[in-house]
Image 1 (cartoon, helix red, strand yellow):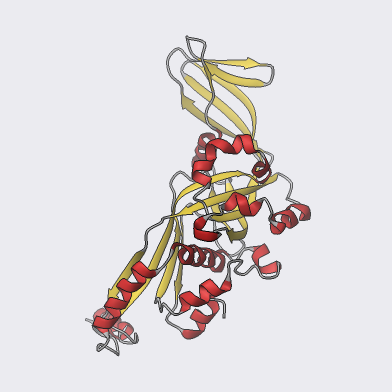
Image 2 (tube, rainbow, N blue to C red; image 1 turned 90 degrees about the horizontal axis):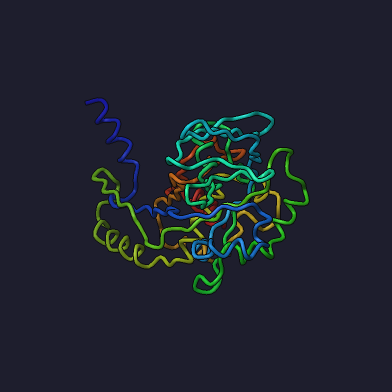
Length: 308
């Protein structure tokens, strides 16, 4: 009974009996070395994904060097050098496939003479699962949207002064400057809370309608801006803080328009199983999954989040 009393006391502090939280999440991604944005040929097979990626994260990722490969029966054993340490990775290969080497190039060949090799991201994902060292340090977060989603992350990054500044400042030894581009799910999701202990229970029906209006009335451009702002407030990246007009980097007017929508909270998720590294920053611990939740009940918190 004491527990129920405390819960009731907590819920009684809320003003309204109906509250809405906007939920946004990334469900597709593309990751490349920073210098890869200039290699149009290498980007071609990735463009179908990149075209829908309006959010980008710039960060440091450990360099992974393959130093040895051996085959024992139908098992391939690989050794990688990462930050001056060696890490093994082993997996089974099909019957009849043989490991071969052409000078410094390793490859697998089947009985028909066809060559293949494990995908780089697949190998990185495997190393991420068996070690605790494949971690992406988030240094900057930005977005590119344009008119009706006409711009993607690559469009922005090709003319990105911040990317150039980060590169010129120098990347720590053993790391490379890398990019993670995210596609935010195109549909709106709202979580609604019904609170019978709230101070104001008269406006419930109108607030319920308001929630549906918000659900269908929040545009993709607004959702991208809110997602970017949520991640920036969550990770608090070094270069978003250091470079002028980059906290957040989005058009502040879009965020200020969203202020009027009166969301009780917004959440932005990066929960992608296939992501080949864990994310962290100076403010956030290393984790494979991140949920940036921002409570906007307090007027001061709302003004801070929306950039006033």
